[in-house]
Amino acid sequence: MGYVPSRSATGGVLFGVRLSTFGSKFAAEFSVSHGHRGVMHTDNNGQPIIPEPDGDDERELFTFVGFVSFLAQGLEAEVTNLAVGLRAIGGTGLSPQEYEDLFVQHERRTLGSIFVAVRAHITLPIETEYAVSDAIDARNRLVHHFFRIHAENFMSATGRREMIAELRTMARVILTADALCSDLTDQLWASLGVSEVVRAQMVADMAQRALDRDTSL
Image 1 (cartoon, rainbow, N blue to C red):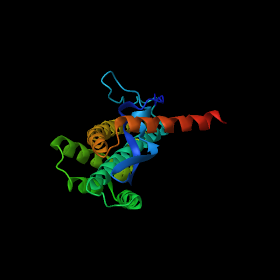
Image 2 (cartoon, rainbow, N blue to C red; image 1 turned 120 degrees about the vertical axis):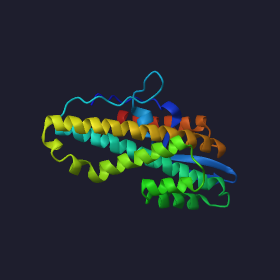
Image 3 (cartoon, rainbow, N blue to C red; image 1 turned 60 degrees about the horizontal axis):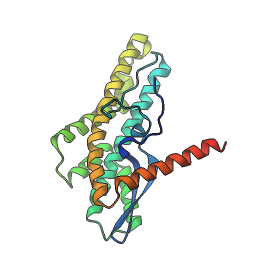
């Protein structure tokens, strides 16, 4: 797949954020770092590079299916963070458990319905609206229809190459939506008192704990 992990946390984008409140301050507890910003190579403009396929067998195809699913889950977490963060702006009377309950409630919903919750709080730029809508369509096609639609393609190397090409396009669509949503989330965290420096340090701490687990073997 031509995919080499990197430990950089470009952009400080975060995955799995939990908000807790201490008086008027908010702290963030991060359960998992947002994958693609932390492990993907970027170009000279800081944009993620979609991996090139290393072949056209079933294993390579499944690798890209997993890769796009990974990105889609990251986008879903980003939109969830945005939805709950927007709710938090006016929620100074909520307890830490109530904030956690909001995350649990949103995580049980589909990406599309979570996005509706975001739109109930703010008017999004039209570019973001279209990008997320396209990403939702791509995610749903992958999860619900992709292998049925490509049943014949799956049987040949030529067909699998077409499938991988579509998956790489899906990845670009999802990454575009994620980048636009993360720009909004960054502004939101800052307004809640969670600075980029704080978030970057939390990611660095997480990366160190992960490294410690490997080096302790």
